[in-house]
Image (cartoon, rainbow, N blue to C red; front, side, top):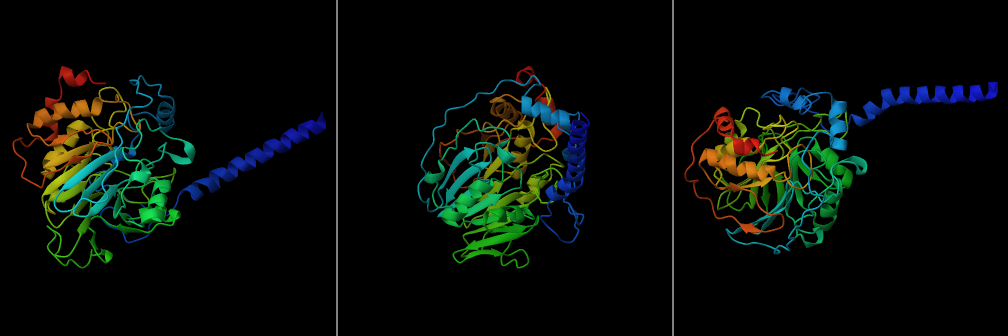
Length: 411
């Protein structure tokens, strides 16, 4: 009996030592340093932050503790509406190239979009993983990719908005790099994450830009060769890193070690492309900042993962359809695509609540050009023409307009 007690005591001692080591070593291991640089108005020398207030991205969505939030997300035991296990997708096989001013867009799912125009194939936040999370955990895909990976045309340019798993999928980036060696543009620090695949990415700060020519990709942040409101003669595209309102992390203690961003892609003709990435509304000024680079022909704006409690219309990190409609308006976009819904379940709202709510929000603005599309079904975007109709709205007026029985009926 004494010998058994000693063995049990030894095991317990080893467990205590292991736990103690884990508490002191593991957090440091998980706190990866992705970027080092000088402090700025959104970087304190160690971590990035939102200059328009970080309080709404630091708090737990829906209130309560972080452990409770993770438990609700894992179990779904919060009264959330049921989602389909799988939804049908009409997958397509895009053309190898789209020349001239024509623009053909295919929503692959979530924030992954293929844009083909002027001989360029551009892919945003490519994610082909079945789960959006680390080590095989995370939400499961309910919609297959709208374009099978092997049916993707040769990709020239990849935009990666930040390092969350539903936007930065290392396995997909590795496959793309090995197959196409595309030019990858992202914001500061995310190049360190992407480097784990063997791929090379150009990481830039907000306000930075890169120029794509026939010779390759060049960082032109400190050498503006042309006016910022359009591409230079001979350029295929210019990519501007623009502000949005979010946060970043891939583990637990590496929060905000890498920057998040939106993008403006200026093209030689036809109007520009805007990709919002993943974002909350923040001060609501950043869409107009992006519009200063020239007219937006086509924008991609998130509308999902906004509800973590009944009736919630947005969260600090994610805009809902009401705020998304305001972003579309403040961009002055001729055409916008609703993204970040209907692929991975990340929040409380019902499967088709985001697009139904977006249609109601667009009635409030009185404008048009912003709607949902079917995954995998390509559509053409006309060359830029100034949006017609609509009335400028503040966020408070939008929320008042959305305070209706029709909106409240949407869970």
